[in-house]
Length: 198
Image (cartoon, rainbow, N blue to C red; front, side, top):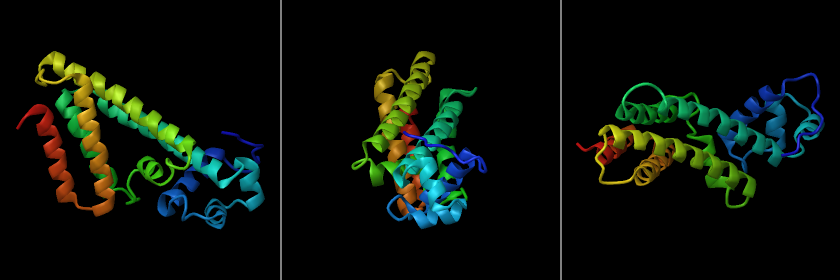
């Protein structure tokens, strides 16, 4: 990702944060250069001088969101407590993000994947990298659950991680699409039961 000379009168990360809110609200295709300039306070020349293009700014936004998100997700999964508690807290965190956040547009990374990954290999790479890192962390958690006996040894850690993640990502997409909290809680409970039993 190219980063051209940055003007000295603004903070690069702050501009990315503001642009993130704009892209999050409008999506990539619905967001114009005028929207970005208006929200960030930058002139068109400064915007393009710094980021090169709308696409490159979007890539910076999605990369920043990925880096922040994977740290937060890993922290939840690696926190003290039983495996069941950590997985439950992970799903509860997603529920809060989707229903109680100030931005009710769902997960920006999932949105980016759905809207742009098919046409933009760089977006596909960021989304794939995020999912793979989350899957690796999830496999470690499942291995721990199998080792301690919290989880029955009927399935491998790889299978369990894949099962959990497929439910998790479907859950996040449905949350954004339907804003049905009752359904979301049913999916949460069903996912946990499929791993730990009723």
